[in-house]
Length: 154
Image 1 (cartoon, one colour):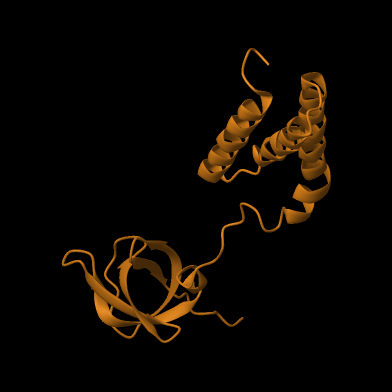
Image 2: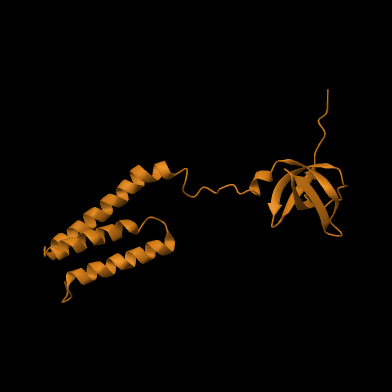
């Protein structure tokens, strides 16, 4: 193959595809790495270059299509799904203000699920200690809260 031993090219391609896969973790080039490995094995047995190239293409494309059509849909629930962290679990939860939330002095603490959080009010208003609040989001290390609206009885 162009004056270079075929096994050198297949080994180089295998290494290149594995490096790209390790850098991206997209499960895209791994199939070409496997195709390169099979072609390298064909090369080791002294099979012609055209058969090595053919098996590389067939194996790589077949594995890629198999992954896209059969495996990836089943992994869809696990791939690219943001995991809820412990912090995310307090969003939408009620808490109680333990230290006045004062946007002017940048103070305020809230107890949510037994944990004390630094807090800011959603509308930059003052919220007095002892007020029931609901966490709407997390900004950095602070929870963003709004006073809980009392349920009105009709």
